[in-house]
Length: 287
Image: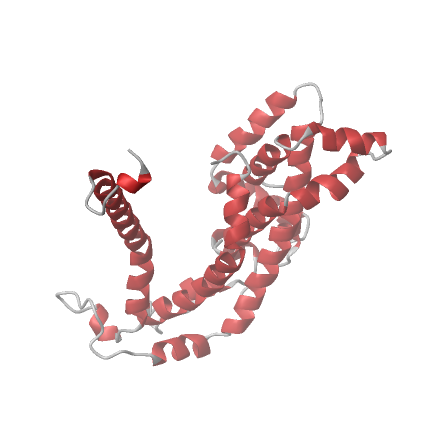
């Protein structure tokens, strides 16, 4: 059947339109499932306190309380906590991305005895939950006098992250061997090859790795709560622990409003870097 023989009512066109309709319907439903919690959080931040305890549930606010966002912003040093979160997230994100790229380059392009076993152990470490290593980590930092400083995140960043190492290893393993051989002929060592040739080629994975690492640190609650004092604490800790009454009851409407403002920077970073993030995932062997 040629293209000219397809009429608007032909079975092929109807089937294509039906497939697209089903696909778009599934995408809309999945998008709604992902946006549902954020939408409910936004609605909660716009309600009065008595509406949150009403029965039956008030799905929409009777009177929109826009001042909840101003109250949540002014009740704590919101910008100060956000600055602390930003400093920690940027320090960790930059360092762990570069260190993971270096380790991934070694696993991808260098030969050494037991390399496959070491890579398997590295991947296996991803199955260890954070709670197992948190107490020993705290004791080490306490012995070194690094509690209530940013040094723990510097050391964590320099130690690389197994998942990011895996991403970089997959990407570097797919680059042509001729790039490396030509650089060696020109007199470059592996350090120069990494910084001058391989790292500039890996901007999609760099973008994806930074977004992932930044999100990890920005959303971390346990480590800042354990290692930092109130003045140096992050926005995640402040949102969850400071919006309470004198009797210790949570101010849910203010927590929800602050949480919406807390999520906005992550959404903006992802929207800005989404092209590199998607490209990094698609070029690292995770299609």
